[in-house]
Length: 97
Image 1: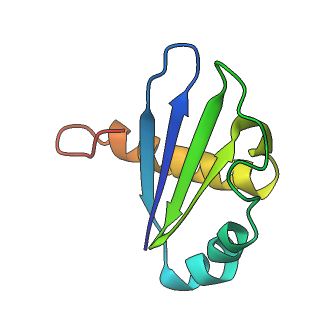
Image 2: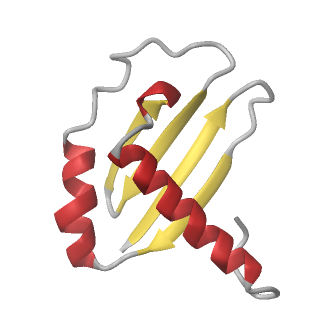
């Protein structure tokens, strides 16, 4: 199953996207429940020049503010970024980070 994380906003307003492949069982046991219990979009005020993160695991998606990316959200973000970085380091033919 594919996990896609996009970060938008910030001072320059650029969007970065990272992705990783995980097993369906890991997604169901660990990451899908996280998305199901995510804070409702708009429940926190989005601050100017701060990032907003969009997490997609399979067909489930959630958007969280930068201040909410801690604990398991931070772990998920780091895991996907690391996997994307490893693919990028593989050289020609690897996916773009």
